[in-house]
Image (cartoon, rainbow, N blue to C red; front, side):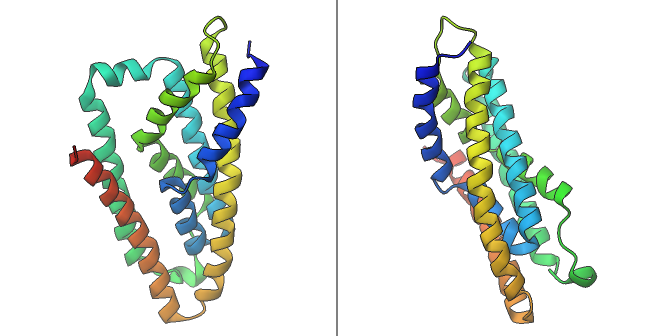
Length: 206
């Protein structure tokens, strides 16, 4: 059901995408710095799950829906920007040491990663632009989309997870100092706010 030559050709293209810094990678970095490796890996897993959803929707024809109803694309952008603003506000107003060293539960980190990925329309646009180039129309389309999505999801989980784990180690050292703790919260919230601003700018831009 999958052309092995096309599939093997897709792998380096997927790896290039995974290694490109973007909203997902920065989100995992912020989660790891704030709450440690487990939260970073959970956020990375949520992002990978979101990528699989994007691929499945693309394979089932969501691209045609976006073309027919452009406002859907804009709505997704603004929902994502609003959620990131909320994350920035919550991060800034929640001390890392609150509750005796409390960190973000893995389930919440997974949920946030899933929402951040699903609310980023660039993901599905990239999938709609790239994946069809490696699809054999003579074979069932959806299984081929899902196979390519699995490659993107696994590669993204590894790359984003490693970025988050590395930042988490730094965060655990910095959190020993109240001044560093405030700086870390400020950096994390700034990342979220900057991502929101970027989405908003692109939404109103030409």
